[in-house]
Image 1 (cartoon, rainbow, N blue to C red):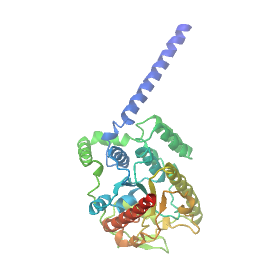
Image 2 (cartoon, rainbow, N blue to C red):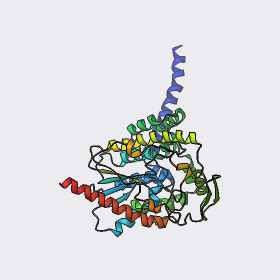
Image 3 (cartoon, rainbow, N blue to C red):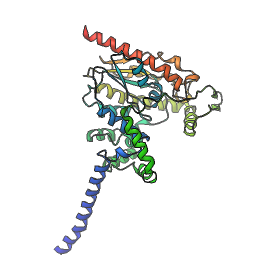
Length: 379
């Protein structure tokens, strides 16, 4: 009887050891950064990893570096290289850390990863689509893309925070799975690597040679919204600008679909809770820091965007967020001059023309604010 029990335990022990060895190897390859260095740098996850990797490695100048965080809306709108090269006399250097498809939750974790001491920057710029909370249809708190994009840069404690943030049990379960099995989410990238190894090598060579200045020469997107036509009475798009890619056409259609009034109120409340929660956490990260936090409302669109038009009585982020010695909100009207068809590539992104005009205005405003703050500290 004893022999049978011993023999029965051996396969179980072997299975346990095999599983442990697999998980160890999986985490060594996919959590250590080994695979991340050869993933497609043009994917969103690849861009986020590269942004964090190069920003960590870049020599910092805490009294002069100004970090521009956010998503594609600020990335397409603001050109740090243009401002830095045209203003060599400035005491401040503007650094991009904006990654497409990210949101307030992701900015919190990105900042935690690249600035753990909360002392790396003179200021951090935090752009929002609107100070008045929008009725955006996406439940960003329970967006699983947060996990897939952030998985390569999270510490153990950050994983706990991220998993605990999901109220949807299915998303939370998938997040736990991703925390344990590091290769989760890399399947498509692995297939692409095997199918197109030469293309991947070329992509990596280009990205590596450019380093953290990889987007310095990009001047922005061509094309305008001048040919766009919309029938507000029937809620239908009559004409799209020429040159919009298929996914941009779909995104535009979504932006111009207004949720029903009761749903708009529901979405507004949900988004207010989400934005308040994560922007407050960013403020709390820097509450004892000398780093200035500068919030701004971006140009909202070439025309009023139905899916984003705030409901009557929509809460204002400036009233919802805690004040602090280092928190500044730019006036909501600072950039309304750019809310014109000729300055937008699509419904929410500035084009190359808008970018070249928006960049010096924002750069000068930031410089003015930071010079003023510096003078206050000297008194």
